Image (tube, rainbow, N blue to C red; front, side, top):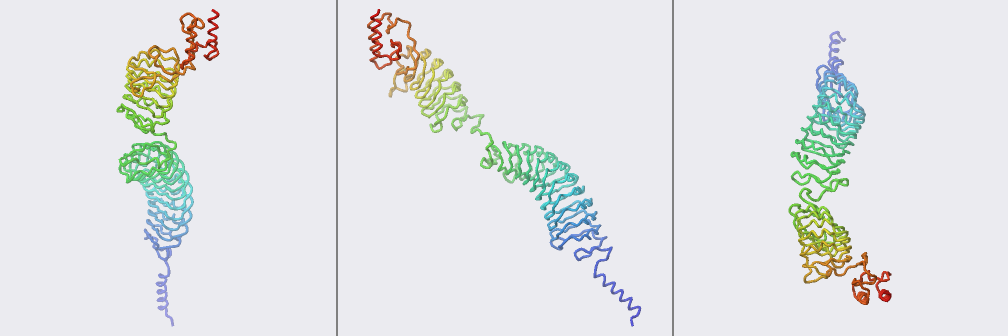
Length: 564
């Protein structure tokens, strides 16, 4: 028979046993098979696969939680909106799981939150505007699948020191509100699809040490305000579409350890100020841009090369130091020190004499003999006032002898023979009173020989080339120079092609070929002698004006005598 005392005993036993069968309602919450006291549980840390499955919505009952860490587990499903009930949370770490879906908007209720890490999940959708939790100092949403733009509310995170949104699918521009995050030291926005320009306001984040913007689609120029962030140690802008020049203000970032600017469309010259970055662990990466030489040498050779750049739009860089050198035929000559110039023919073959030669003002000897030069003698050559020897023979020079050559009053030797020079001998040649050797032979010079040439009294003229004495003599033969010839050179002109000369016959009696005032048999002898000689007859001997001087002219002359 069951007594009253036995019934009371059994009820007490069942009550005690029921404690092991579940959590106390209203007092405890069961999560993953464990009971957590609602009042006393302030921290819940389960990491490295201590739990799996989804986060139970009952977690929202632990309203005194300040620290929740469920990282490096195999948690799946969505982050429950009930997490927004944990209004005392200061620390929320859910990274390295397999969460999907969107961040619940209720997260905006966690106004005491200072640390939020959701990276390395499969979260998607847009970053909610409710993320603007003003007490956050650390926010990492990297390595997810977030889309849309960075919400401007991000600018409300005035206390933020660490912001990572890298490796998502974010689009749009970097919001200018980012300038308000003045406590930021780490900013990672790389590996997204961000577009537009880097806001100049980013230069106000003067506490930044790490700035990662690489692997986006950013355009425009690097703002010079970037030089204000002198605390930067790691600056990465590579793999974007940035244009314009590298601002010289980049040289103010003297604490930089890493600088990556490669794979953009940067152009122009690299500022020398980049050599101020003496703490870099290696050369800054600048390859695959449109940067132009010359490239700065910061002590270990140029920091990039033309092979690493697309220089198709660059202006061709001077081969020589233009302040102290002049480039002639691919070689550099010191303006002050060069007194003799005798380049090898292969460097000048088919080239012209560049007008820049006038810069070699200390030149005393210019030897360009048989150098296969073409083109005209530049007038600028007349500025080489110290020149003593000007040797240009045996080339293919064309055009006229420049009158400016008369300014070279110190010349001792002027050799222009064996070219294709045309035009008249300039009368200014008479100014070269120190000349001892003048060779103008074997050209196509025309017109009359200027009377001023007779003032060159040091010349030793010859009408033909002499193997033994050619270098001491002066020549003018084998041109197209026209009579009358000056007395000083008349016997030395040698052969001249005067077929194109326009001659005027002296005013005299018709048929008076020896100009003695009488037309008689002596004039016939003169005409016959001219026809029988090898020299070309004077056009005035063309008695019948048929353009030829022959026996017909003799008959015409005889008829004139018979008619007298």
